[in-house]
Amino acid sequence: MKLLRAALGLVLLLPLLRPANAVEPISLGLAIAGAAASALTGFISYPRLYCYFRECCLQRQDQRAAAALQENLDKKLFGQHLVNKVVVKAVKGFLNNTNAKKPLALSLHGWTGTGKNFVGRIVAESIYKRGLRSKYVHQFVATLHFPHAHSINIYKDQLQSWIRGNVSICPRSLFIFDEMDKMHAGLIDSIKPFLDYYELLDGVSYRQAIFIFLSNAGAEKITEVALDFWRNGRTREDIQLTDIQNALSVSVFNNKNSGFWHSTLIDRNLIDYFVPFLPLEYKHVKMCVRVEIESRGYAVDEDILTRIANEMTYFPREERIYSDKGCKTVDAKLDYYF
Image 1 (tube, rainbow, N blue to C red):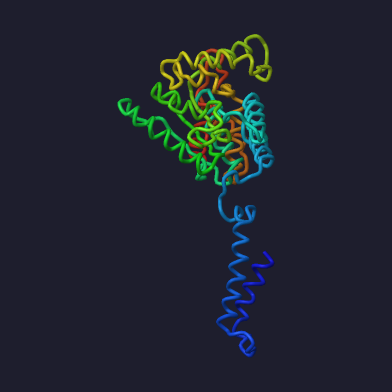
Image 2: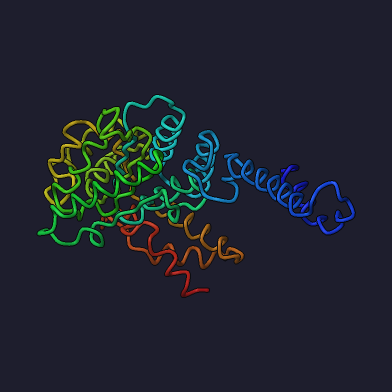
């Protein structure tokens, strides 16, 4: 940096150097320009400085990314102790593993509004400053990008080409597949080679890439387990991943309305974690409302907070424990009051 500033300073002083006849002005100018160019080249080639101004593949160091992920989930994700624990450990361990044998594959399941998309966004932001807007983060929405069943073979080719091309550019690419429950069965199996234990495929390694799948499939099974704990007088925090994960994976695998129906990704155990998002309770909805009010810069009005939480509908019909839309409509309801 000092060399760059010095070279640029010399360029500015060039008109003042004319009395010296030992060196021709043109030669001197070229020499100074060369020094400036050399300094600039050194500046650009120095990764940390270059990446300060331009987005780079794996912009944040692994430890910083894991710390950012933990902090954001602690502050902004409510009622999801399993998600917090599993996602942080899985992502942190993967980022710190210098000899991964396969890409990281997480499948997030639960009702609408429980935080699946939010967690996908937080993972992206923890690795890349631009988050979902990063050129190294790729988001697919089933109903938008793969709408027609008759075009499934075209989609398979396009998906493979897209993943292959982007991982070639950035090994730490992040791919997020939303609405897996609406994806045509068989389509996602086209990416099976990229998730498998191959060192190289056509000269490309996929072992540093991350794949995240979002789906409503399996939400019924998750609710069933949560209700069982509640009816037996146990708290939701007592639920462990082992209480749900196997039943969840089987439920998703056998769900004919899911993009994972009889998928080889599940059959070959290529999904590292099936992450259950528990249905949100009344207290969690209030937490969502509070954070959203504060994010808009308003003082929290407890009366408005309570009214919004009460306007939500809850299930089952008799117990009314869980919000049927999670926190998804909180933002829209706040627009009415503010």
